[in-house]
Each structure stands twice: as C-alpha cells, then as structure tokens.
Length: 440
Ligand code: UGA
Image (cartoon, rainbow, N blue to C red; front, side):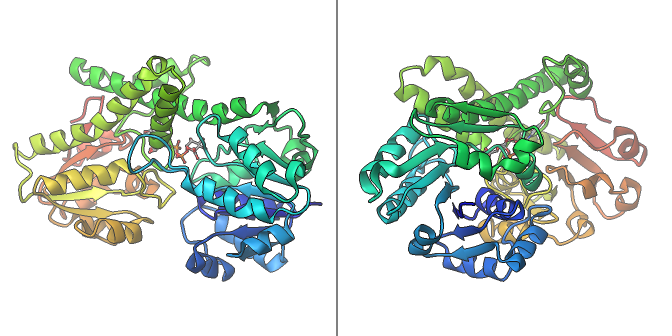
C-alpha cells in the first residue's frame, strides 16, 4: 500500500490525514508552520472539530500518523501527495489567493524523483488542475511519471470526520492517461460502503466543488430573501421553509433563514467563481451570485438596525450581549463569521459589546481585541441592554429564559438564527425578534 502525504494541516488537511491513517494508511502530514507541527506531534489538535482529537491521538500512537516540516521527508517517504492547503480570498480582489497551492507544488515538484501521484483537494478556480499537471511534468525529475488527480473535498466543519470517513460522493478528475486504481485503494473502505464514485476530466471535478458551494450559498440567500418578504407581510419563514422543503426536488436542508452564511468557504468560493467566470467571458450568467452575496451581507446590517431600533434609535453606550462568535456551531472557526461581523459593526456604532462562545473565545481575543468577552452565559448577559443570539450552539437553546431574566437590564433578545422557542421566551416575559417570523 502506498504511503500518503498530506500537505497542509488545517481543518481539511489534518482531518484528511488523521482519517486516512484511521483507515489503515501510513500518513506523513506536512505544514510550513513549525509551532503547529510541534503541537500536533504531542497529539493536540489546534482547533475544535468534534471527534478529531481521539483519532489524531490514536493514530499517532499506532505510528501510522507522523508530522513534519520537511519537504524532503514528504518526498522521500510518500508516493501519494494530497494538497490540502488553503485558497482564501485574495487581499486585492474577489479571486482566490493561489499562493499556497503554487508554493506547495513548486516546493514538491523538484523533489519527486520517482513515479508519484499528486492529488489536489483544495478548492481552486477551474483550469488550475491542468496548469499544475503541466508544472509537475515540467519540474519534477520523474517528469511524465508524476501524475495529478483532482479530488475535491466536501467536508463540513463540525462534521469533518464523518464527512471524510463516509463521504456523500468521491469525485476524481483525471487527464486521459491517468488511472485511478491507486486512489480506489486509498478510498477502498468508503467505496466498499457504496459511496458513489464519479470519474471525470479535470475541469468538471474542479467545477463540482464550486457548483456545490454556490448552490448551497444561493439556497441560503433564497430563503433569506423570503425572510424579508415574510417580515413585511407577517408571514413565517420557518413554516414556509418546512412547507416547500417537503417537495423532495427542493429539500428542507440549507433553508434555515437568519443572519446568513459565513466561514472560510461559501463566501470566498462564490466570489472566486464570479472572478473566474468573468475571466472566462461568462460573467453575466453568474450575476445571481452577486445577488446571493448581497442578500447575505444585508442580513448583518439588518440585525444592527433591529438592535438600534429596539434600543430607541441609538447604539451609543448600549451594553450588548452577543451569544456566539463562531461562523456556525460545533466549530471554533471565526473566518468571515456573521456573528463577529455584527458584533464589530455594533462596536463601531458606539455599543459596548461582550461576546460569549463555547469554543471560539481564544480566537476572538486574538483577532477582535476591541470586543469584550465573557467565559460564561451568565457573565455575558449581566446588565445587558439587549441580547443577540447569533450562532446556534445547543447550549443557547437550553438557556432558561425565566432564570436569566434577572441578570439582564432589558429582557430583549434578537434571535438571528430563528431557533429559540417563541412560547418559552415570550411567556418568560422576553421581547423576542426573529428574522422572517413574528416574535413577541
Ligand atoms: C461548506 C459546505 O457545506 C461543504 O460541503 C464544503 O466542503 C465546505 O464549505 C468547503 O468548501 O470546504 P462549511 O463552510 O463547513 O461547509 O459550513 P456550512 O455547513 O456549509 O455552513 C456555512 C454557513 O451557512 C454557516 O455560517 C451556517 O450558519 C450558514 N447556514 C447554513 C445558514 O445560514 N442556513 C442554513 O440553512 C445552513
């Protein structure tokens, strides 16, 4: 069985490395960040991902999972190299910043002296795979014996282990002369479980990923547009979503209206796709993604306006308690978090904002030092003029509104995720506002 390397130990790479080791493969995981690799060698996972810590610990102990910062180790020990580095939005445009992918390929290629397989998992603009395949052939000593397969990743943070071990589908993009037997061996366990395998050309495989994320983003913005229509007509967006969701052609998932999508994937992927579509001369066809982005960002300003209105027209000096900082529950990822974007805007409008989150406070303190933080729900609520529920952690649904009412100055809450029970909060004497459905 071929030994695997995984290049990049973020949410995607580390999960992939640990899960591949748990399937019985020998895996060497690489990162340029020496401090991170030292932490990983001790078995500590530097981010919150349910179920990942025990697998990392177990696979280090089994000897199947090792870590390095040396490209030479990667090239010497592995024959299959998974590229799992980030492709964030560029600082200068809406396009993807491809420097990490380029850097990885340029570092690895000159060291590939024997036949090897490079597997791209990062989300990239269509056309990237072919250019990487060309670089690998031109710059690796093994030349035409260095092959590339494009194998996009569909894992969701919070469910990354489950999604990696039991994926919905496996997509392998190949060029005409590359066979997929090695990767069929790597993924033998999920394939034996009946996971659908789709083998395509490179551009189709690249597009599967951006098409999936664009669809999901559009679906969320679709329901959020209806949430605004519900607000002005007195309709209920949750009931609406339930009712249309029963149509299996539509489906109920990703129809939860609220403050919208964030994170390291959907926002930057829809922007990168628009940028790439424009380069390829089909910009007009992707205008709908601009609308989806606009609807999504408008959710954030809407909450700021709602808070302002609830406080009598001014945020200046208001004490605001924010429940949730991560871009979604069961993650400590705060990249493009709608909750923190709202918290930041409230702060800029003169409010004193204090944030609670079960897992993400360390990142908040580091990157948003101007925001206050509280370690417990009771502390964040203390003396608040208004409470904003912005990331739907389970523990917030378990708050007893009756018990915490005494802690706040005003029993006013905006539920930006539309999940707190109206009856329970209203009967405890709270004024509760939702996005797209009647409150109290
Ligand atoms: C997303 C995709 O769901 C994954 O399939 C994909 O592999 C991943 O991006 C990626 O490209 O790596 P993720 O960013 O982990 O996964 O998060 P999602 O579960 O998609 O949620 C994204 C955002 O949408 C969150 O802020 C969430 O709160 C929001 N959301 C989700 C809604 O506002 N409403 C919904 O109904 C669902």
